[in-house]
Length: 100
Image (cartoon, rainbow, N blue to C red):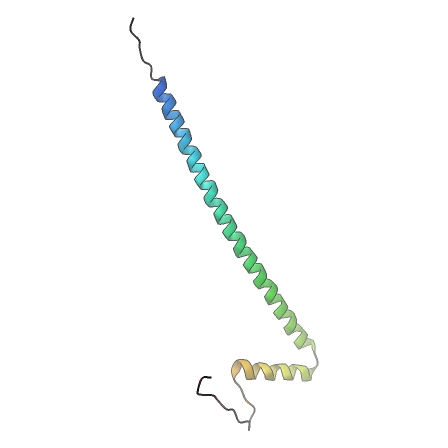
């Protein structure tokens, strides 16, 4: 009697190879997605910290604005001097050109 080989071993091998490829692909996708999620969480934490800092700045400005008029004038003058490099009329301003 002659043995007749069937195609089952090839189909079984192809099925196992296909399943292995799917498992590898889904594992890769899962790992890359977890990495992306952790990066986005870090970005979210950074943005939340920036929001808290800005809220503190806003509350300081609101406090400065809610003070009396002389406090506002002093605040405005300090900001004009530091941020805009303004000076009062008749005031001498010395500039350090040495860069120290």
